[in-house]
Length: 345
Image 1 (cartoon, rainbow, N blue to C red):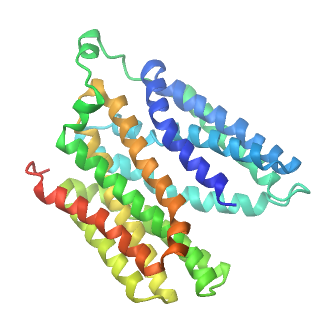
Image 2: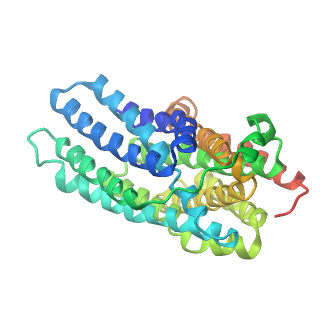
Image 3: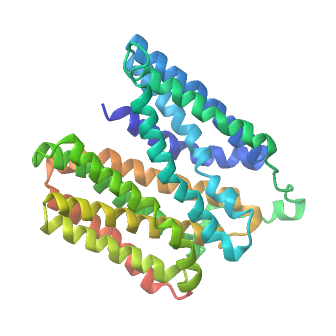
C-alpha cells in the first residue's frame, strides 16, 4: 500500500537532474509547463488504474507524477532568482509557507471528491488532474532569464568541482540530513502510534496535521532569521531542535509526547531545509545554477526516499527508541561539519 507513494518520491529524486537539464536548455517556463501537463495526464492515468483495479499501472503513474514533481520543487529556485540576494531566504520561505495551504486544500479536495465516482478515489485523482493543470495557464506569462553567454558556458564546473565548495557541501548536508531525519521519523510515527500504542486514526491524523503546520508555518520568520543571524546559526538551531525531538520521542511515548515531538520535527526540518536551500543559491556561479540545483535536489529527495522506504522496516526490525537513535549519527555528522567549517556565513 505504501509502494505507490514511495515510488512518487523516488521519481522526484530521479527526475531532479533531468528537470534541471531540461530547464537549462529550454527555460523554466517550458519545464514548469511540461510538468503541469504530465502531472495532469498521469493523475487521470491513476484514476483509470484504480477504476480497472490495476496496481502496476497505478505504481507507474505515481512514479511519473514524481518525475513531474521534481520540476515543481524548483519553484523555490525560480523565486530566489527573482529577488535581490538579501531577500533570497524570505522568497524561499514564502514558497514553502504555501505548503500549509496546499496540505489543507489537498486533504479537503480528497475528502470531498473520493466518492463522486462509484469506485472510491477515482474522483480524487480526476480532481487532482484538474488542479495540476492550472499552473500551465499561469506559466504562459512567465519570463525566462536571458540565456547565459558563451564565455560563461565555457566556465561551467563539473559535479566534482561544485562539491569542492564547502558552502555547497554544507547546504546539501543541511537539507539532505534534515529531510532524512524528518522523513524517517514522520513515516514511522503514525505506524507506531496506531499499531503499537493503539491510538485511533483520527488522533494520529491530528498529530500529522500539526507536524505539517510545524514544517511550514515557521517559514513566516525563517527568512528573516537567516537574514538577521546568518546561515550557520540557524542550522545550529535546527540541529538542536531535532536533538530535542529525539529526546522527547525516546523518553515520552505518550500522545502529547508524539505531538510535541512531531511539531518540533517539522520546525527543525524547516530550519535545515530553508537555510540549506538559501545557502546553496548564494554559493554557486550563475552559469552553474542548474547543475548545482539538480545535484542538490537529487541528494535531498534521494535522502527523503531512503527515509520513507526504510522507516517501517527499521521500526519493526528494531524498536521505536532504536529508530530515533539511528538518526543521531546523521545530526552529529552535520554538527561536526558545521563546527569544522571555517568560513562563517
